Image (cartoon, rainbow, N blue to C red; front, side, top):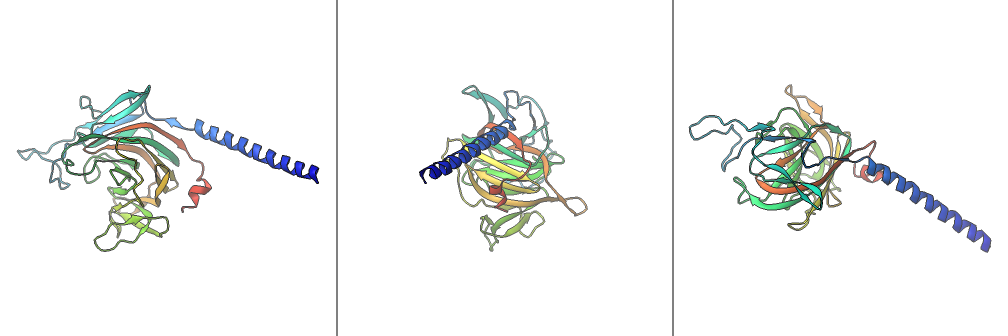
Length: 299
């Protein structure tokens, strides 16, 4: 009997050993699949700057004091230093001054991926957000021309909000829409995401307009780095803040000029400048061949 127990124990230990070995190989393979998107020259990104928006902006084209239209600064214009790089522990960090509305935009388009970055807030704010929370965001599945939405600064896209106390919120940009597990809207109240709820539609042309709150505030204290993970796969996405899923989304789409709903499952990634100083580091992306069982369960 003792010998049999030893045989069984040995078999169990071998199974655990090979399982761990296989898991290690999988982890190593996944780690090799990451593509680093940050270097000191921002060689993986383009830059777009629009305006220094003023208090009272209402979505119309900005004008100067004489009533003339102000043109956006535009693509890859030098001399503004809104997006610069610094070094910390020999690693490049993107500093976003926030002084102008705009973004950096990946030169490549992506679909079915895991995107990850770390961010922390700086100290400065600019008009028109001097008395408001610091604000930025990750805009994914970005397509079409720049300045397509309300602030005339970004491409049509889906937004993973970065905002003090609200990191993980959703905004639709231009005519994008998506379905989110969230509490149905009550009069005068915002939608709030939660994994226990059914999916509701959110977007400019949907019953629930444009915006949904994350399920809870999982942001670290001011001055600390936060890790954001964005999972995108075949129209589904997850907003993950410091390891916690705060929003579950599916059926990503947009409304075209003919009023048709078109799937929105790939595109560029934009990182916003929105009147607040912040820093980004460890920006990377890897392709996904499928969703893990853990992530699939959310849908």
